[in-house]
Image 1 (tube, helix red, strand yellow):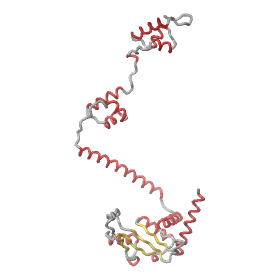
Image 2 (image 1 turned 90 degrees about the vertical axis):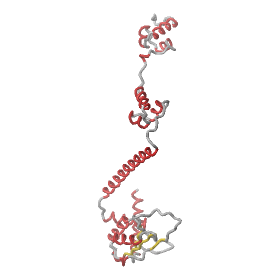
Image 3 (image 1 turned 45 degrees about the horizontal axis):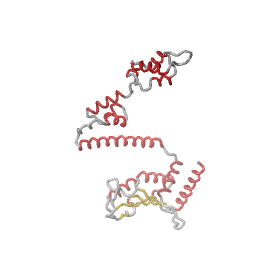
Image 4 (image 1 turned 120 degrees about the horizontal axis):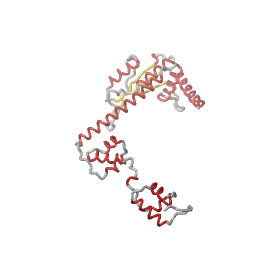
Length: 285
């Protein structure tokens, strides 16, 4: 049934033999060796239409996972639980079990909501811990400031938050306003660096009239360590009943205004220093 002189025997005869072997459970390799047909194209044509024996079929890698997924689904497991158990994707789980009935809900809506809320609270806790770790690492990385570093920080701080001279309104006053106690402390340290006497400072509290005015006044006086004589009359902002304020609660203390008396020369130094920083940044790039 082999061939002679390199020529194959009659194709129909070979096909009959190949099909007979295939139906007896032979693999393609066994048919090739039996009939001495070493051309794969010819061999495939000879057995075309005849299914391969079961024993030659490779098991699919995920067959076991599929069966396990179906077992778990019939036990009432959710998609999420099956995913976690088998380490499969949601799309695979859905494909394997979508013909099966959905498991009955075992929890009340209230219980399910409580579980979801607990999970969300845990995520928030983890996020907050990561946030705090990042902040702490950044804080530690700063370390101590040199006099030059504090000077440059103070100039930038003032130019961002302080009052500035205008061509149409020459004032050359040094006035700094902020609600952040950290900003206030850095600004005061900067003034100390520049040799500005505390006696030249005047403070004014600015706050909504329906807030804890007295408490805010005490807070700022303690923070800047200044006598009441250094404070001007508190500026009260009228409350608009149509406005919903978000800056409320014990942490709201309004803003503190710091004004340096006889500060024209200091203002000119600040402005000049700022434009020096701008030029330095241009050269750095």
